[in-house]
Image 1 (cartoon, rainbow, N blue to C red):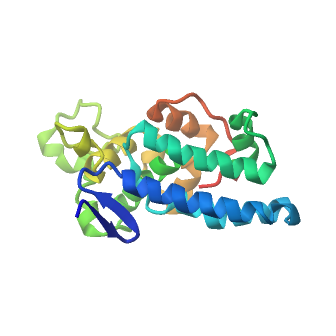
Image 2: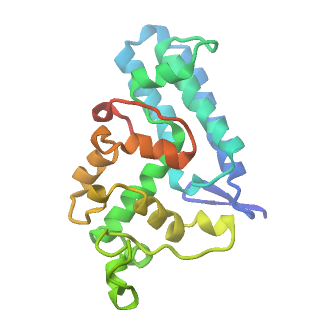
Amino acid sequence: MSTVRDLGVLIDSRLTMADHVTAICRSAYYQLRQLRCVMRSLTSEAATTLVHSFVSTRLDYCNSVLYGIADNKLQRLRSIQNAAARLVTGRRRTEHITPVLQSLHWLPVKQRIIYKPATLVHKCLTGRAPAYLAEYCRQAADHAGTRRPGMRSAGTSMIDVPRTRTALCDRSFAVAGPRIRNSLPVGIRDPTLSPGTFATLLISAENNLLVWLMAICGAGVFELAPEKCTI
């Protein structure tokens, strides 16, 4: 057997997540076809709620396992989000999708994927995550005896990032989580922040987090209204 199912996630032997992405696309497009039949009878608010319930939840479910997947597979998920946005707004395929997503205040798929490890690392540092995950998030201050005080990581809430030799290892939480955390502005790396405050700051324009999210994803700047962003 080359593919197994665990908590609804299809995991193939090479961890490409190709089968899982295919399953998401099949299910999401089916829901979009069903919703299209009743869309004219719904208000804009009701249509948005239904799309979130039947489509966005499928894109967001366990999406942290999709961190680092190939761009062609990520593009398939973006196509679902674009189709959902056009269905809600009634826009045509020939119209540019960026203004549509901006009007709905939807974070793009890549940013939604990165958001999950960032918040999970914060929970690890604040004692709200299981111990088997928290052990991968050790702050540099915990190893002060092995670091020189003058190092940049001293006093900046940096987390140790293990060295790896393969791209597959870079996708693991032990590497991706600390690396994402270390890329955040210093103010947001404060482990004393409550989960709600951290989540708010994570999508706050005051800290240019949306700019950071796009930069780390290798895309252009995507400006949104952070107080209305849908995660």
